[in-house]
Length: 224
Image (tube, rainbow, N blue to C red; front, top):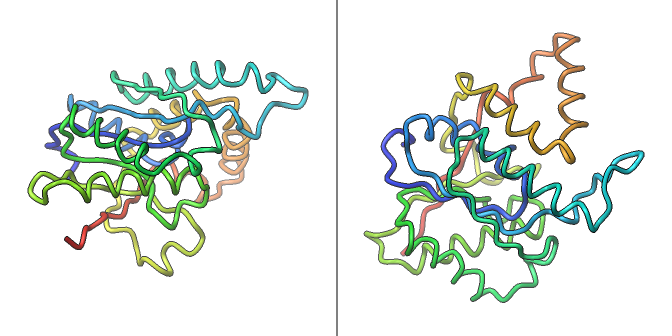
């Protein structure tokens, strides 16, 4: 599935969503010269981490996260990064048709064969859910023979219980360091997690780098 794509479109609401969920798969594709466009809907200006002592304010954080996102895109080999500048934590309140049209316009422009986003109902954050709904609806409205495949990331605690095991699991060991670089690029929000992971590695925890070696996705099927 990941070796012969025409064009890949990623749609997530926040900087770092892509690093956690699909950076390894994306890097595998960009290494094969598959075109990838990343549409990031906000600058994550409501991110929880401002530092202790603070390294940022609410006013300065958006620009910090913008630069982090650019570095993460570089780490993944993404050359087409789109930052839409919608307000963080308010995507759920955006007009549904506006959001669907935003995605439809991207699909019309890029003609992707694959779209990566969150799994509706299993992505925890309201902005994640609103983004996923817009992507799924935009693709549903297309002619069946023109629809790109949607693969989606679900990480709610009950995802496997309700959805079963992911349809696709990808070994990303070969690009483990690229995924780590993408995560490290988002240092304002991920530094604590990187430090915790390194601490676990020191204690030889076998689970410490599973998130750096495997990525999993559900394929979204449309009924009509």
